[in-house]
Amino acid sequence: MSQSALWAPWRINYILHKNIEEDAACLFCRLPEEKDDRTNLILQRTQFSYVLLNRYPYSSCHLLVVPSVHVADLDELEQEPYIDLMLLLKRSMKKLQEALHPAGINTGLNMGAAAGAGIAAHLHFHIVPRWSGDHNFMPVIADTMVMPQHLDSSYEMLKPFFST
Image 1 (cartoon, rainbow, N blue to C red):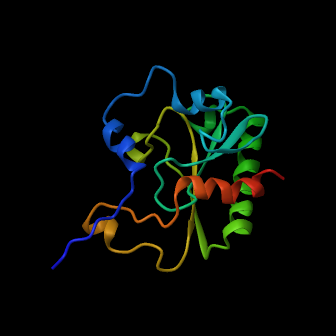
Image 2: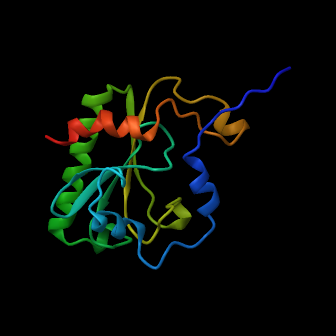
């Protein structure tokens, strides 16, 4: 029986760095300061928040909605940034539905490392489009995600929807 390979070259950075502590600067604080939205996969900015593609997604077009202020808990957000974040979360879900027409959407907030937050020090929401049958045995058996679209293609497809 021949063996086949599943190529996901963008995952190597995650594999090599997932157990290494982040730089002194928080990733979610650093990315918007760099002003290179294309490289950093930032799709849209608001006064107090931004939305970007997850560089290590669970599914194609997996988005992150992040407050610009460095907080770990929703209760730490002042009213204006909180409202801005929630409105961007709502608009991002709508834009994802317009762009992709998914059968469903998972939206979640993992607050704290014990809840599964990869970057627990900086609050962020996940938006994951879903289709019936979009995942199979690969994550369970091989600890491998099958990504049908490259991040660059996802960015190019979604960016026009977030430009309006």
